[in-house]
Amino acid sequence: MSGFQGRCAVITGAKGDIGAAIAAELARRGAHVFAVDIGYRERSGPETAGAGQIVRLPLDVTDAAAVSETFREISVQAAPISLLVNAAGGPGNVRVPVDQVTDADWHRVVSLNLDGLFFCCREAARAMKPIGGGAIVNISSGAGRNWTRTGVQAYAAAKSGVIGLTRQLARELGPAGIRVNCIAPGLIEVDATREEIARIPPEDRKAHIANIALGRLGKATDLVGPTLFFLGDDAAFVTGQTISVDGGSIMLG
Image (cartoon, rainbow, N blue to C red; front, top):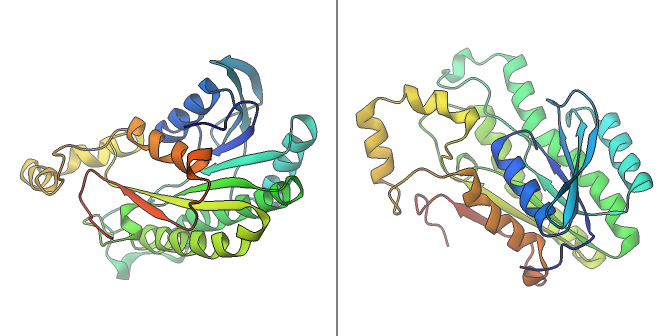
């Protein structure tokens, strides 16, 4: 995979295991990475990482004005943004029956997983059009392609929306040289999911793993290769696609 040296990349949700793994590998391959996350208290860096560097910035992606300001700041102080990975997200409360889901819970999850992603895609398009193109990768979920056992209604709806938005933006932005693709992870064992995984009864967990062709849960690093493929020059003629990274749990054509 090639095409990262000297390019300016923004990774949202970069404090999480998945975003951090993607940011680190992009920097190792020579990109100037801006890792943004609501969990960062202040700007840090730049930190040398491989052939590139990483700068960490606080950002709440659900705040449209803050997203606009941060993307403009990056473009002015560094370089035009040509790569974006939308990894920010989260399921909210799990295993809550639909008749007990509050309006606030619904809107909070949809805002984080869909609205925030849209805000970042909009700013990326504004940055990429004048430079003749770029690449966007949206992180959806298996919950956006199939039902889940955890009763995450808003999350499933939002992640399905991410897949639909990916296709729509790919069609709209293709003439500007901007490619938009999507990753749909299965159950990935990271800090944010370990507590929920631990609550799954042993027999249910065994059954879940038995339904995965490769016979194991995913790791954050499993998402790095597919994401970098979509971002890189090797995928120059690929756009509007969603690939499941789930070990063969959901096999869709």
